[in-house]
Image (cartoon, rainbow, N blue to C red; front, side):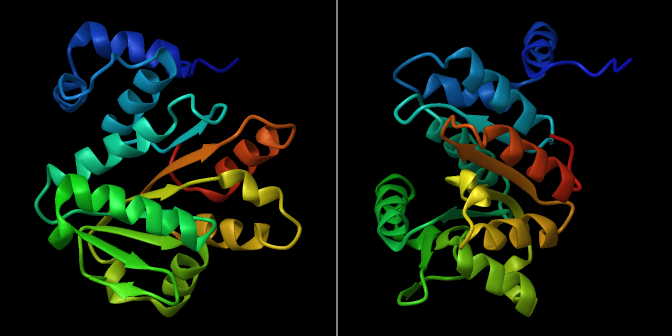
Length: 201
């Protein structure tokens, strides 16, 4: 019988022990208090785990990715890659991060566009990251987190292999922050992430 704690139980224990100083700092900057699922995911990140967040559009999945950015920026040499399935979303996230962190800290790689690739926050399409992994790019150095937005694309018959290849080939010390919409493929997405990733989820 497994004795592993659920995310909610891990969150409750961490909260009682006061072991989430970064989350406490992050929460003070938010206009609203975090929901339970957001807090549980953020606690897991601060504890060094990867997370998969499945919630409807508009439910607040992005806040978990933003906490990953917060953790990254608290360490002077760390980097985070934010991947999206389409260029339009990459452009949108790039502009959002520039407004928050400044142009010098944010890069954009979409195949057509190459902006500040040495930045600590780099937004890109998932295909770009897959190609970087196969090429052994120097940009992977000091990478701490990878956000995989719309990870339910794992179930896509045409593009799903790209997400799978990224999960398989990410260095074992890189933490994944994956988000997905609830759907009938959610269980297979979670199972796929667990099978491919070396980091506990």
